[in-house]
Length: 122
Image (cartoon, rainbow, N blue to C red; front, side, top):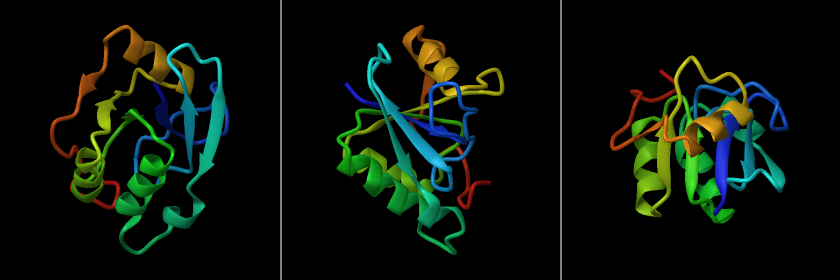
């Protein structure tokens, strides 16, 4: 199983990024955190439109099973849902990528069944 966490930095101790489509990085790991891969998302940070869809395509290309993020917009949610990638939302209590993985493993994160933002990170 592969998990992608929206992050501001490139490792497990990095702060989480609270938006999906315009996150600076996606830290990809497994539930036991034995492997870590970083996927940059710089092309979408300042995109006028389509950031969520493009980010979802990048994630799908990496065969991700689960995304952990603060918010996901409608287009990104549809794109992730279409390829059966589950999305879980973390709250303000989750500060780092490692915290997000731990919260998910402990069952403290809610699976998202609909977009949590209107789009453009809001």
